[in-house]
Image (cartoon, rainbow, N blue to C red; front, top):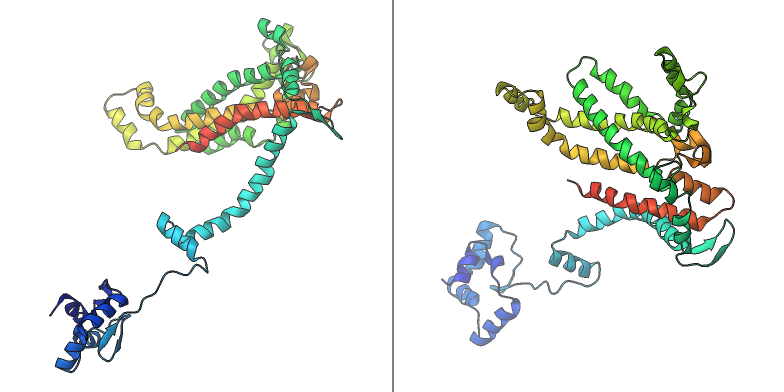
Length: 389
């Protein structure tokens, strides 16, 4: 018995690699196939006996005792056959890829319309001179040059002397330098403090309240706190004997921006505390207990056990804080209007975008330049967070 007859007998003839054409050649060359010889000698072929004994779903058909293997032929090009062949060649499940495309298409369309489209529109519009009603001529980089020469964006003379107003861009960066470290350290400190206290949920909720409060309300609260007549802060100064320091803090050029930064720190501290609290909850308590048994103090336990666990969260907190400050608008607008305080002493980039786009003389080109400057600063930070694992 040859190999093919043995495979036919055990019902595995569907694994035989020869095609119908090969069987036909063998039949033509020898007059009759070995299956036909087996049929003539034994009355029935071993293939038929194997099929009856094993009851397999053999795709072969018998005709007069000989086995004829059907050839499925090449895949049809219709009905998505080509895309299926490509998917198989690339190792992609065709059905899953189709379903994924159906689910992603609406979201990607909306993203293109409301995100990519406005960015591209602003990038092109920044090279034209136009107002609210007419698009003027192509001016190349004139809007960009005029924006960076505008003292409301960068006041180079005051910047060298560190005197307010320094311009929206330097003042916005000053917010970042002060606000982000303070809110990050306060959030981490409060998360560590509340970790083992009773009633920590209530305490966390009180701190987090600032983050859930609309920022326009935070700006109004800052006005009330710093009011020279009935403000809480000035009353506190009077109580402790510093009445000479009482002033309208939001209208004093050299201190107004610092007074508003405090409000921003209150907002962002709740967010950073929440992230740090979640990270601390994921720290294995057995590691801390082992460090205690080894005689490690609080500082060493924090440095060797806790900090490695919360360090990735710190990157998120810092970057989100930078993005939040660079997008600052509501607090400044509530406290000082579209001028950004007296003589623009705490104006930021968001205020300048609003002023150029909605207050006469309307200069959409300049507004788009300032908005793109914000985007160029924020986009790499957002991309870094998106790529974090």
